[in-house]
Length: 135
Image (cartoon, rainbow, N blue to C red; front, side, top):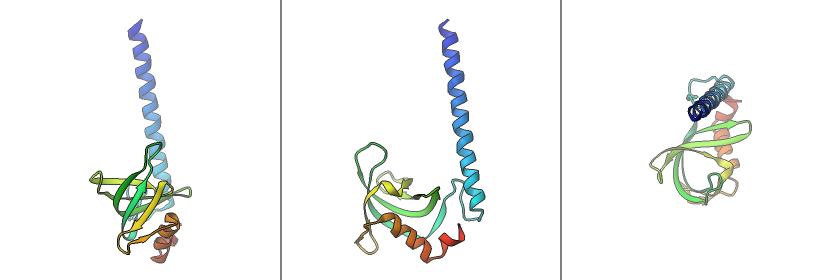
């Protein structure tokens, strides 16, 4: 009897995993079809006009905020939610950050504290014409 229950849980877990994978692939296809340029990567991220060197205080989910140094080089807009991706010096790997979760931000190039991070990044994208090309 126990093996039957274990097998049922195994099947449910596999079905759930497959459904999550299908939805993620569908979402990526939707992004790629909306932004069909060659510069869009497999995750739907587009290059920023220039690398943004940022000191950020980032809150991921329910965790305490953590200070990060990020060299952001890609961005995406998923139904109005802005994301940036780049090298996180704390984790020493590329990470994706949801911009609305950035609590504080300093542009390391200018040492300027950024009040509205989303507006700041959108303005940089817009200045270089990248936003208009991808809408």
